[in-house]
Image (cartoon, rainbow, N blue to C red; front, top):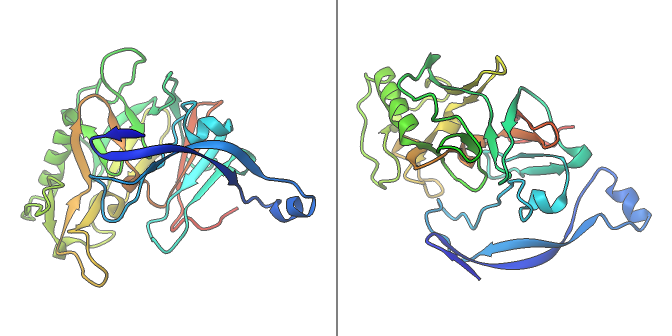
Length: 282
């Protein structure tokens, strides 16, 4: 059993079976497309997770992670924004490595740090006042870096990045009066009447090794609050990000909705492209 301040879990091993385009032929040939003795951590007492979320899945390249246990050099995943659709994970030759590509930084822990972050942009303008070292990762060096973390729900920046971003957002939306978050979860919120999909300024993460950027579309940057019951619409919306991280900044899963993430571990490259509701694309 494993206990932390936010969850209680147990470890177990499972025999996993996978679906592939060749599954029916494999069944006819009496082949077993599976992996034995995959280690899982099963949560049963979660806190600080939104709604009815029952757990998380970490996808780092550590030897104990799902990716590390499978041993594939390529994999991809896509999590749909619509809960009525299914997400996808693909490994090996089935992985979708497509779209704008940027480099990952090599590190012993197997985390997915962006190698070449230029900075944050809001409504096309760079967010100034963010120190140059905030998004710079150095193995064994001082705190810094921006990584993709499937175990983090909402993006969590270091304060040195989050506070200037908040300042820029407020400046650009100065004609709208902020309102407090009744749940005390997020720092910047507005009345729901101002939320119009497609009309809110976009937050971007830009890189120095590509002209493309990661645009955090409005439905991935903002969230209706409080979490509504079925048929009960939210009354206000908030910037779905935090500034509590002490050492590294983490891009959370809420910001990855409808985003196909393709990772090539041999080339240390990350590819990103939006697919609405993550269809079963080829």
